[in-house]
Length: 323
Image (tube, rainbow, N blue to C red; front, top):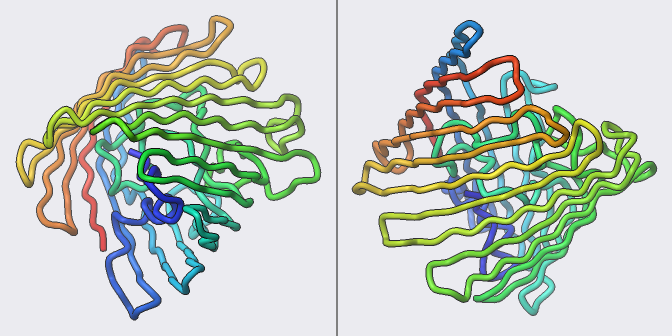
């Protein structure tokens, strides 16, 4: 889950770091991070098997607290990324009082139920994004966040919402276009979180030059018990011809005991104008060896429509070390 929805603006910005910002250097500086690697095997029909055994990602994050300012910088490595090491997070947040804060720099999009950082995920692969990619990644800009114990909200002006295959940064300019994001969350109902957000790229995005793009995202989660969480998400994207459609997911996570948990997910994606789509079934058990090391497995099945493959089966085993 996106660990970014909290009861106060300052916690909104800090919550995505809670999975690994654990090593306190001094009263002002802490360091955290993770490394994850996996074996993956995918077989498509028709098609051939694809084997992959590699590091998935590694991240080191530095957090400096100098009240009322908090600064965050992270270095990120992912095989196949445009550069070997990316300056991923690079922002400063100022607590302006009354439950509000202002953030400037490079930061992650508000949108999406599923987490960006691997330790925060409940499965190995994402539910959707194969054809449409409605959930953005990182971009640079300024944002205003606020909230209380029952609600949270945020608005952002960024260099772009989308930047093509390089989702680790925006397009780096405001001359041709600008991006906007916002969200509102409601948590007054016990054990329930309701979330709604949008993203809008004006016409002229360096990658999507010909069309403006509007994305709408809704998700809801409910803690049935201490052990069971259920959730649902829907996202639509309208970026013009070939970049318009929707995706969805239904999710259940069951904490079997203090070490074992398992996620079950049904998801789908469909491009408009009779474009391709799929339905995906996923089961992903996780074994937590200790607070710093976990092993996760995943089995997924794709049922495609209007695509070169009729179906595909994917199996993965992933190890996750965090500090």
